Image 1 (cartoon, rainbow, N blue to C red):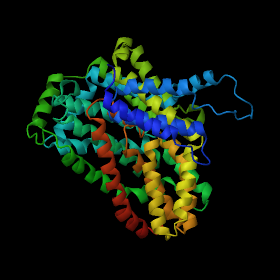
Image 2 (tube, rainbow, N blue to C red; image 1 turned 135 degrees about the horizontal axis):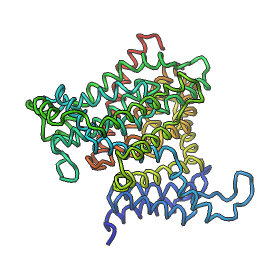
Image 3 (cartoon, rainbow, N blue to C red; image 1 turned 90 degrees about the horizontal axis):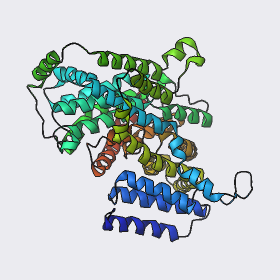
Image 4 (cartoon, rainbow, N blue to C red; image 1 turned 90 degrees about the vertical axis):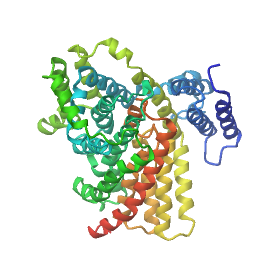
Length: 494
């Protein structure tokens, strides 16, 4: 049998219950049916009814077969003739997403860091400095992400292609590998730190992730006098953000305490290993050169120096890096084909992104946004509690999204206007929603571009990932609601 009966039965039951509930007023029937499929697929993934890739193929098949993405009439007002063909195109549409291929290519590039030994060399350098305590290793990863965040507008590139291979090499140095069942030694902890440091860095710098610039744009469109410049954003977020970065490795350490907690001999061992490795090999030098090219292009340095004609898209940059590794022989095509984690991630993330995107396109997310916004506004609460509820609804609705950009596009503008209507200070609520747009990416294994890369390496279970995400979101909310609000008051932002 290719599935587990009990989890599969629960997933099917949830799907059918939602499917046969009449669609609420203002919601298209096919959008409601797509929601039923989305909930059922997520339930099946959580319950491990089938492997996640198999669940993704099932999702794509059901969307194409049941034609739930195809409205009765097209945007031109004409009846769609080939609904079956359109449904098939819709079901496979996310495989055409640049983000999907950036994720896949980033995982493949990380193979080059491991294969050449450059990632291992970096790991031993970190361990030689920070390696006496496991928690010190965690802080070294957090610091690595933080240092490159201002010039890496793609958190997928930063967390997945830059820091994650180093994290894996560190885990390997302690023989902590998912395939050997030894991930609890240190790898599980480091993987979670790898991810949550990536998200916290997104909170601190407007240039650390793509959705931040959209937040700035939407806020300015709603209230032109509220301009979140790079400097304004940084000074507002740096204090509460650094508080989160400091306490995050400690919280995760006690949530998922690694079997190895003290490694007093690790620095000496790391120095000895570096001596044994000797000088850098040809493959390492090429990998380092490709790495430097990627960082320059991800940071947009050529465009800054030469003008917009020299700009290279983040996904194109990642594919260029992979191509250079193939051309130089650092990676072979067999290496790429054997990177099962990359192909698996491309498939399951594409399926979830496709369903989430069409929930937005068919108007369900807009309907949810309007219902939540108007419902909270009509409760007669003062602006403080009204904005608290708006912010919580905004953050935790991210369980329905596989893209921070899509979420910000669909909901931030409406929620910001609703908060202002309640009487919220414009700059204060702008900063609250800006922080919320980063915090929400903590939640799931599909919450941002870097999450499927790190989760896909296999160090954590889905339950552990979701639990850590929920706890860290609560912690970050509390930090920003206390330290952040006080700090913004001191800065005169409200």
